[in-house]
Image 1 (cartoon, rainbow, N blue to C red):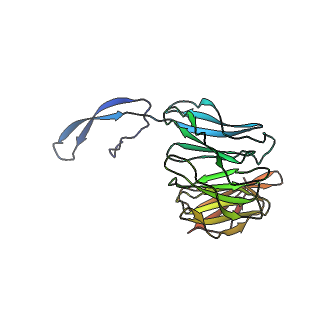
Image 2 (tube, rainbow, N blue to C red; image 1 turned 180 degrees about the horizontal axis):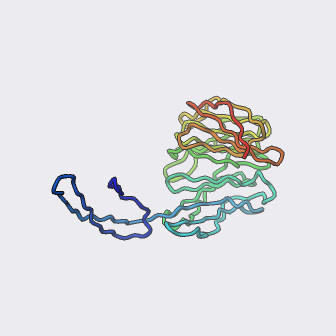
Image 3 (cartoon, rainbow, N blue to C red; image 1 turned 30 degrees about the vertical axis):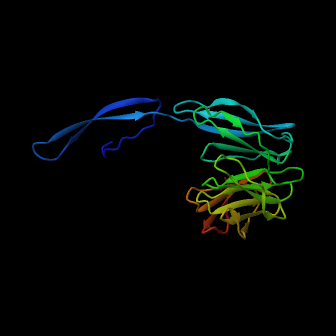
Length: 274
C-alpha cells in the first residue's frame, strides 16, 4: 500500500520474495531498494463442530475450512454417552471448544460431557474415553456449555434439574468433578462467558429473564437480572464484553434485544424487530 503496509491471506506454505523501493522527496530524488521475503510455514484450517443428538448415541460432526477452500466434511465421531433423539429440542445442544485444541460435547440422555482433542492440521477428533458426569439429573441435562477464555473453568447449564454447575479444566483437557453453582427456578437455556472472562450470561426461557453472574476464581457470584419482552432463546456477547444480544421468540416472530454490560451489570434491554 501507499503507507508501506503489506497485507494478505496466505494460501499455501511457501516463500515469497519481493523488493521494496523507497524514494525520498529531495531533488534529485534518492532511491533505495531492499530485497525481502515472507516465509509461510503453516496455514492452519478453521475447524467447526456440531453436536448431533441422535437417539441411542450422541455424535460430534466435524467440518474443516482451509485458506481459500470451501468447507469440507471431516467425520462423524461417537461420544461417550447417549442422546434423546432429534425430536427433543432441549437435548444434546451443548458443544464448545477452548483455544488449546479441546472439544467438549454434552450427552443429553446419559448426563455426561465427552472430551475430544482436536488435530489443528486436519480437524479430526481423538476421543478421551473418560466419563465426565455433567452434574445434572432429570430428563435432559448438560445442554449449555461455556468455557472461560483462559481455559481453566467450564460452566454447564442443566435443563434437567435447573442447575448451573462448574468444572475445573486440567492442562490435558480433563474435567474436575461437578460443583453446584446455581439452583434456579427455571431451566438455564443458553449460557455464554463474556470475552473478558468476568461474566456468565444466562437466559431463562419460561421466566423471560436474562441474568449476569460475576465470575471470580472459577465460581459464580450473585446475579443481576433483566426481564425480556418475550422468551429468550439465544445469547451473544460482543468482543468488547460491553453489549449482550438476546434472540427472542414472540408468537412465531423473531426479535432481538440488546442490553449494555457494564462491569458485569446488565442494562435495560431494548427490543429490535428484524
